[in-house]
Amino acid sequence: MPVKFADRMSTVHRSFIREILKVTEDTSIISFAGGLPNPELFPVSELEAAAVAVLQEAGPQSLQYSTTEGYLPLRKYIAARYKEKKGIEVDADEIIITTGSQQCLDLLGKVFIDAGDKVIIERPGYLGAIQSFSMFQAEFITVGLEDDGPDLKELEAALDQDNVKMFYAVTNFQNPSGLTYSDAKRAAVAKLMKGRDTIFVEDDPYGELRFKGESHPPVVRGYLDEGGILLGSFSKVAAPGFRLGWIVCGGETRDKLIIAKQASDLHTSTFNQHLVYRYVTDNVLDDHIEKIRARYGKQRDVMVESIKKYFPAEVKVTEPEGGMFLWVTLPESSSAMDFFDEAIKNKVAFVPGRPFYVDGSGENTLRLNFSNSDEERIVEGIKRLGTGLKNFIAKA
Image (cartoon, rainbow, N blue to C red; front, side, top):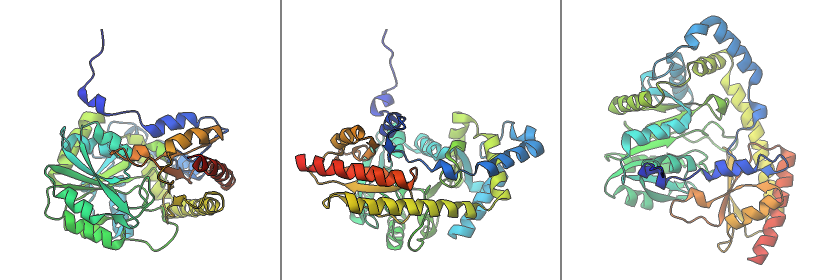
C-alpha cells in the first residue's frame, strides 16, 4: 500500500549541496563545493580544556535538561558582544539559543509562513533558506543583487505586493555570491522596511570574517527604530559541529518562537552551550577570529590570483572582502551543470548556481569555496578548472 506523505514534501527536494558532498568524499577530488570552515583552525585543545572544566565544575547541571531560551550566561555574552563589536543594544532576554542557525529558519517558517505566503529572498539566495521556507510552501519573490546590495527598485516593488510576510537577507559576504551591502544600501533597505507589516530577517553568519577593506555597519537593525530579526551563529567563528546559533527578537515574536522551539526540540544541547561559554570566557575569541581571517584572506587571494591566471577572460568572478565564497559567471550560453560533470572527471568539484535561483535562472553561474582548501590544492584545482573551462566554452 503506497505511503501518503504530507503535501509539503512535494515542494521540497534534497539539498543539492549535500548530494554533491557525497561525491567529494573521494579524497582525490579537490572540492570547492561545501561551505565548510577549515578544520585546521578549530580550537581543539582550548575546547578540550573547556570541556574538562565544565564537567568538573558544572557536570550535573551541564548534562541536565535546560530552559528553551538557552543558557543565560551565554546569552549575556552574545548581547555584550553585539554592543562592543557592532554598536547595537541587545538584551539577553531577546536572544534564543538555537540548534544551529538553520533551526532559526525552521522556527521562523513555523511561526510566520502559511502555505502561499510570500517571502522575499535575494537572487541568488541562500540554499538553506530556500529549502527551509519551501517546507512551509512559501511563494518566493526574488530581488536581484547588485555589487553593493539589493536592487532597491525591485525590493520596493516586491514589498508593495500583498501578503508579503518576510524579507530574508544575508547582508555580509552573502552566500552564495560573497557580496556585501554598502552603508547606503543598508540605510535604504531599513527605510523601505519601516512602517510595513513585512518582517525583516537578517542572517549574519559571516560578518566577522572580514579580511580586506573598511568595515561596514554590521547589521541593518542598527538603522531600524525597532523590529527586525537578527540571526547569528558560532559555526564560522568556533566550530560548526556544536550546532549553536541564535535568534535576536523581542515581544510576541520571541514568545511564539519559544513555543515553536519547545515543540521542536525542547532546548538546544545544554552541554554544548556550557562548553562554548566556557571557551569564550577562558579565551579571547577575537584572537581566534583573527587567525581565521588571516588564513582565509590568504586562501581567497590565492584563489583570485589563480583565477586571473588560468580562467578564460570571458569568465567573471566576484572578489569579496570576507566570508568564504567566490561567485563565478560563465558566458550566457554555458551551463554550469554540464560543466560540473566535466570538472568531476578532472577531480574538481564546485556548486552549480542554478539551485540558488528559485526562478530557474542562473544556469551559467557557480559557487567556489576557498575556506576549506590549502593554498597548494587551490592553485591546482583552479588550474584544472581553468583548463576545463577553456575547452568547455570553446565547444559551446
